[in-house]
Length: 252
Ligand code: UGA
Ligand code: MN
Image (cartoon, rainbow, N blue to C red; front, side, top):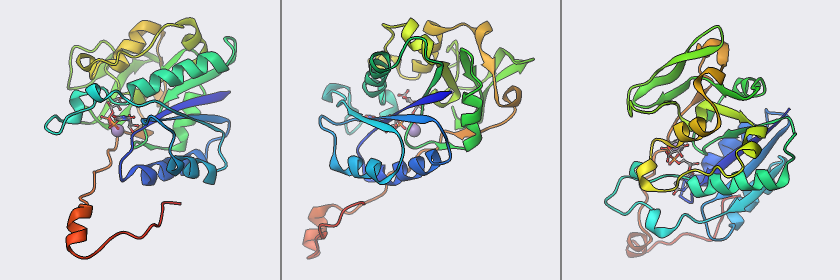
């Protein structure tokens, strides 16, 4: 069973390092198709080179988040939806390039999380919608569904208590058929839906009693919501003042 994995990716100094780590994880995973969507108005050579350097099946798409939705200097980024336009065009790509009856799974994988190969074995077990614990998220060591005999009856979570399905994007996968069935579903890109995106898509496509509890009845953590620290980098202006400049070498 094929896995379509959707990765939005934002331009930043650490981007190619993060994606190198992720691509190398994907080397361990058979039958996975990577939909990588750059948050840029044009696809960049940098990302193209990274993708070419790996022998993975992929499609490289792009769409720029409109400026008015980007966080301003004095706004922290968690007040803005991240990677939503990108996830949306990936959903559209799937609807246009796969068949309604294909038996495949869809998973949203951010570029900076950490994924154990066993996670993908769990994803391949999904019949309609599968859920599992995610490490290092929601101000906790983990958030997780609480399950009995493979069914979810509540959730262990701490922040945003009003979420109906309190899981991170990394904590569920859906059958491809649901993406076709809910053919108009797109993530809400507006700022007031921050933190509710996961809950909203699950609410639209499934219900609590349909959820399949995976990762050994949600007792195992196979994915972590790690965050790459943004590095402190000296400005080019300061470098110039120090009589220095970068040579034109490139990543890859
Ligand atoms: C958390 C969830 O794990 C995300 O799946 C969810 O989209 C996000 O919150 C949200 O609710 O907005 P978090 O780690 O806080 O994610 O966010 P980032 O890792 O900064 O961004 C998520 C993904 O979107 C990354 O792959 C990132 O490269 C991409 N992104 C972020 C963009 O494409 N554009 C942006 O402006 C920001
Ligand atoms: Mn992240």
